[in-house]
Image (cartoon, rainbow, N blue to C red):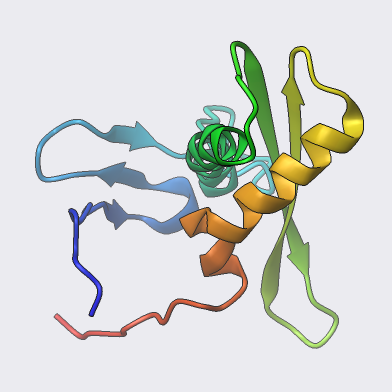
Length: 138
């Protein structure tokens, strides 16, 4: 049985051009929709927020993977590129590209660490469909 460590709650209003808040007041973001050319006040997109969250989570997994594989990491960066794709048959999908740099390690070592991090990162697992999404009507 899995143990819940914590649960985060975010509340959106107004869809892609609306707002995102949380009950503790830590998050208060007005979104921007780059597809809506009439909206000059563009804020971050949901994809940008997801890219930031995924890069941070994956970066943590990268450090753990490096340690597990016997590498000392002193400086590293992770960039996440999240694209919104329109499917031919209707609907949308995300495409993600993760880039990592670890000072002092060669490409083969970093690739191996990235693969191990991708195996353990919760965001990576969610995108592989290993987690379910429970739908609840409030």
